[in-house]
Amino acid sequence: MRYNWQNPEWPHFEYNLSNVQTILYQYAQEVSLLAGAVSQLPDASFTDLLIDLMVLESTKTSEIEGEILQADDVRSSIRLNLGLPHADMNVSDDRAKGIAELMLDARHTFNQPLTKDMLFRWHRMVMMDETSSVEEIGSWRKNSEAMQIIAGAIGREKVYYEAPPADQVEAEMERFLAWYNQTQSKGDPYLPGPVRAAIAHLYFESIHPFIDGNGRIGRAIAEKALSQDIGSPVLFSISSTIQSNRKEYYRMLNLCSGYSLEITEWIDFFVNILYKSQLESKNLILFILKKAKFWRDYASHINIRQEKVIHRMFEEGPSGFTGGISAKKYMSLTGCSKATATRDLADLLEKGILYKLPGEGPSTRYDIQY
Image (tube, rainbow, N blue to C red; front, side, top):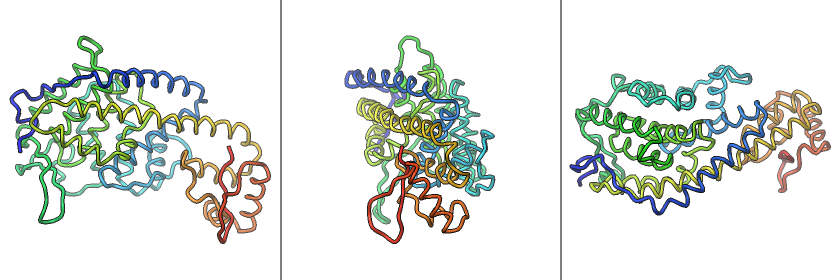
């Protein structure tokens, strides 16, 4: 097989944007609508929204690569880095710490040029728990062996892609960074943010400059491009939607990393992913607005134990607390007795804060009524 970087015209991608003109217009409209919805949030709720989005992006971008992180660990790491209360001071998962640092750094520096040092810093964050190949953490890959994307059963493996040799990475990344930073301005020709993000992601993944962590960093680069386009950090999670379309995502990356530099199909796919991400973010923003209203209405009507449990339930996001809250879970979260848990739950039910979930079982379960 031959790959895109072996084409004499590399990296001059070809594409037609006629198929995405409507979706680009809808995307731009949603940017304004999301900004308007968020402007209604109190400062504390806005902070909660940003944290929820970073937690979602952190866990999903890791999940795409087969790493399962606990949302609680990531959230605590983010809050700790922001100097906010309720942070668990004893997060032991270095992967959660690292990806949390990446999310924060990417958002704090979104309007700065993308540089080699920034990428090296991001790579050290992504690889925080790694102990092997230390010399290649925070630097371009150096191994002379071919960097290949391989999948399939043992003995029947298939090479889907082979990246440029390590001795070409420095020059390739210098050219990539020059292109990325030159296209940040809205000059002529102007690249719409979603289109620039799509090209940047494919371009970076084609070079595959690091020994590991390329996917997570590549998606952070795409998010940076979107944020630069609108002048503020994006209010949705790219990786959440990509994870839901993971097979097609890898299929399209493989298809458009071939010898041809025609990438219209990739741009069509990626722009639609971004638009879906926006629509999904609406649910999260609506949830945050409801949560803000809840605390405004009920904060003074519950005790410290009840407040702690409801905070924990809200941390699960729009999907809710898995299985609802039971007296046993309540006891575990608060350290109280069964009698106290039962009494507290009955009080929340009477006040209309909780409602009983349907179904039979050894214990009654509840969810938040809001």
